[in-house]
Image (cartoon, rainbow, N blue to C red; front, top):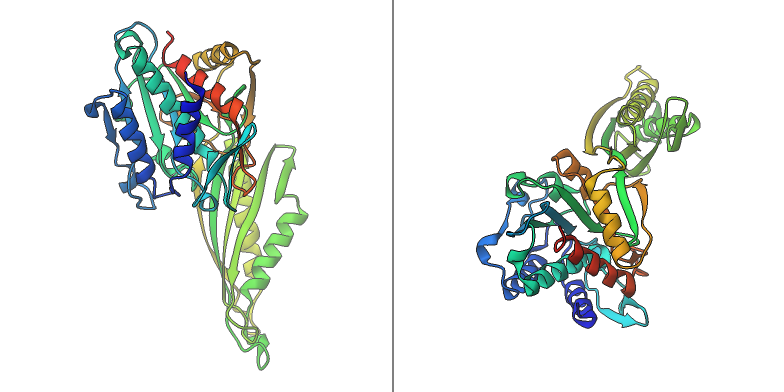
Length: 387
């Protein structure tokens, strides 16, 4: 593997704009390089996931089949193509042992480094003669950053049977993420009664007061922030609060967005129930002079369910070997954030997640550790060229 060429692939990818829903230019670059490497166009296709996601993007997940005649397990490699908005306009430059953006943007190493590592692995495999290796499949996902939407809506028939799977995303390359938390997102609309705040405030019922009472109640009882109860642990947050148009109007409506997370699905549902009950009670406790109380609309959606692989899982064993091949010591961890692997698990594809050296992601201080990235390239190559 040529280090300079491998690094250049990342630099090329990082400069391409590609926020969630706008990944086509990234996919086009990947397809062009794969075809140049000798992969037949018939082995490359898009699965149309953008027609199933809430955000109608400009391309679906990019699926690449690497048929092989060798014996061994079928391996899947995956990464996501989209970046967060702060990375649009990235101008990557090498700065000593790292890569950073030369302008005030994020770098986009999350997850263009994963894409570049897998692209390098595929090209290295083709140089060595694709027919000598066990079958492999590559998936480049869309819309990961806005809720794992590409992986969620993956056309699994395009993937086929997979024996072991490796998702290349954030963190250190010697960390094997073998599980992740589950998350649920809520949209809450609180309805009150409008009135003139100066002339007749008693005729109104403030939705802001209702929502504030609910939030204060949840916080005081330990159901916001870090949630630790005898029956379980998790986290909860109200992250968006919108409402009101003028100071002289009793606000009749506010809209909020919240989330709950836990490694225990039943306890996560309990957190959601506590949030719903708190908002319901708070709305009913605030009324106009004529006793017209408030009410809420409440919607909840599971973004991803938690999972954890068994310690002897073949994906964990192979990942450990790949890490040892590059001279590192592997260790296992469980993530408190969602990963494409959450949805892969639900699809019957049991993947571990490996890092590519991304640091300070989603900020203007984002960096890529070059040595870590190059090791991720070597690990990905070993995984699809070994049996």
